[in-house]
Length: 560
Ligand SMILES: [Zn+2]
Image (cartoon, rainbow, N blue to C red; front, side, top):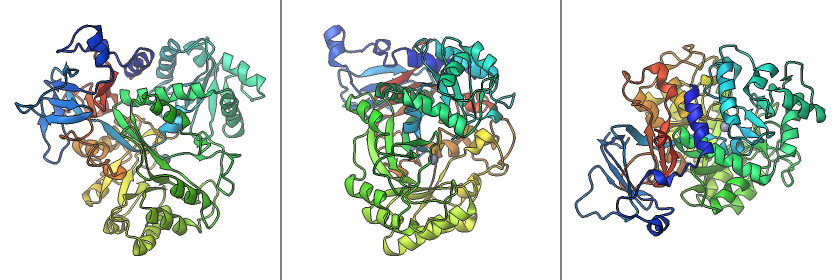
């Protein structure tokens, strides 16, 4: 469990684009190497490459030229390769299409303060300490090491937050803050306590910071000293982590409105770890995109929570943005996971939901709606039906998200409109009452894809999500989704081939086929072979080589 984090952290600290690893077969010398800088030409040979295409093909080699697959299987005799084409021998390893997370909050993950360090796969306080200790080796002394959301004490053997002494043992050269969920609780070490004391934040003798106001005061003290360069560095780290676990495309579902954000008057606001300035939160990623530094694909869904009947913020979003606009690395893809007020955080059932969805439908945008309960399912489905009467949603790629519970009748009503279901099995992390009813949903024949809903209450690591889909077991090993498990092939299909649809990009993403974008993940072991990867080891899988757009963006093979 700890080893894969060490590998990730080492990769972040080292140059990920280690071009020295792959000697060009056709060129040599410095000028030739310079001419090939940024090349997106690659051949992967001698692999067990599972394409996830409709025919279920597995091939030994693939060729990518200028960022797209030009041959899947042996090349035709006449196909010429660019002089910059690199060849990588997979030595029989299993490779799959780049995974697509159809709903998460990677933009928020990137702009969190401190050197955010995912703890999502730690199983004990000792794992937490080891992960922080490794991270400390690559963080300047005195800088805050944080872990902001994406973990839950349930996953730790000890079932509690770490103490001040335990965090000091991990590092005392850096202040540390580990922060749970949307609004804490949190815990800090001795240097952290000194910083927070100077800001008037209450910290107990054992380093504990209570949930809600005290934890938010700690978070806001760190937000206050964060720079734009910090946000760019955090965004690079978030993408490096995503690549290390094999997720090459992230569909981002926005943030809650941070109180005091200008021009959002009349919108619901709440200060949480999942809150941001909805206009400025994308600046770090967009800056990196301009510099050509995006290493994983970002798809943006705009979240709005207008409280007024005429939904002014949503209307301006739709009026002033070009739908499905961008390039292969960053694109505006839709509206979600809210388009109006919603009954959560004490809000009433919205009266502006129909108006909001009519506007989204008329603009022709994709849409995804958060739902945690039967009442929210019903509100969503009946509003989809109302809108569908005047503006058919069949081709718009609308979906109901999370669906911890849904019955056959609800599934069939969505299916009849050409709407889909996006499952997010975040029950994995905190345990509880199980769901989604994955078997029922898949067997219904409705369009369905998967994602994580990371990074506050769930894990971006898709192998945690896939482990849960296959075994029905939460992070503490409890069987909580009995009778609703999927096969390994089905679960991976929901994370690859099925997810291009939600982005209107099924022709470009999700499978390894000639003409599609060149995203491939080489796995640390053979996921499809239960003798090699038993059920309880699925969540230990990671990527050893991640290719996005024909470029190597994560490489753990070079370390061998
Ligand atoms: Zn979400």
